[in-house]
Length: 314
Length: 279
Image 1: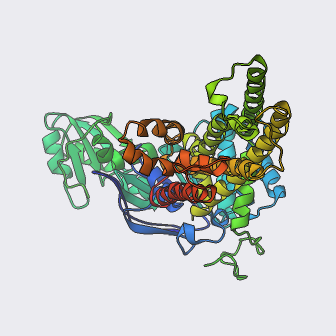
Image 2: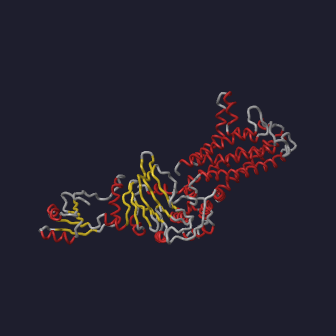
Image 3: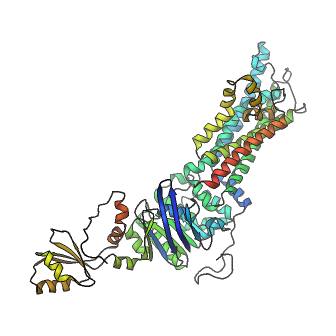
């Protein structure tokens, strides 16, 4: 269980995390999504006390991370991939962490096996590939058998087999009743593992929702229409619960609140010729992009086509 | 919500969780394991030991051959078996001080500090443990080094005006003082590394304070020099192991106190930064 209240972090003028409020609950996988620079890593660093919040607070399993008697048993965190000394072997790295808590050597061997590092555990960690380093970070996160597991971009650098391993691991951990909090900037990856989503952009909370709700709210029932007389079609279709957007001077309209079938019938009824009538299902990726567009645009790196809003978009 | 309670919070959670706990002794054990699991520790300690013994023996040999050939270097005019065997101290302090810097600053340059602080989020036990573990190791290595250097060095110069034995007044105190000085240099290196969080920065400040500043002080007016000079880290440290003392130097006890003061100052700065700054 992670509870953030008005969590804020400023670096001089720049506000990295801006008044975040969210809860991460046990028993499910919660995805933490946002474009690069949205404040995900900073938030995670504050959860384990590496960074001190400028204001607000975040507590884990009922108290501040640093107040726990055995922090590694409360939260296991994978932060930046290489939080290791490259000259130390994987085994010695894990042993050094285990010794601080009185975690037995047996457990060190266990997590090494669990992470699939058995054959390289005695080699210098500096020589590890990105994927191996990631596995070592995950082994360290699981070392204390923690109630809450927090992983920052865990699939980075993993091969497909490793990605699948992470996916199953996260689900298994959540099924055991643990709190699982995973950040990513890849919506598609999150959609496969996460039940709940916390989406941030520019340090602010954009959505605290489930995967299904996100798609629904993002307008998964949009119909793309191209008509000979879009202005008249607009009048014909207008009604309660119907939103119509489109560019002035363009034949194309995007309609929500009506099915393709209803639009086609109405157009035929009023003798408006249609050139295109397509029901568009919004992918999760698109829903995510729509939500974070403003946050990304701020950084001037958007490739998303912007739409001029004409109708009253609910 | 404490996990130490016997009630099960969520139905599927494991019923009996082991009661792990971070303690000061465990952090010490962790830092001990960390120190010895890096190759750089073995190499640098080996170098420190080599410097102490080798330079001590070289100095003793040089003195002996000077006596034999009849023209002695002026530097060696007042040499004793102690001063000759401690000739390597200057070089050994570099090796031991640099390793001290690496013990702390090395964690910042590699990213290891994030793992360390996540495991011990109260942070200060990490600094105290690093300083204790490494300080003791440096002390033992240095003490071993100076005694070995003296045992062989004093044999080389036996029968010369510099000859001295362990039973000679002040010799054991000098040798122990040198070991203690080098151990504290290690602690100062550890503190500087944690304070500056940079290997290059830590080594620079260490070298500057132990080796460069004494030279710069000589540019000051002489009345200032006399007041400041004895209290500089390098000079106060030298008083700890010098066999003879005059009006311009501190007594061994006072030197030790002043040097301990410098060590405490560096540690206090390191502790302040460690607690106050994000890692």
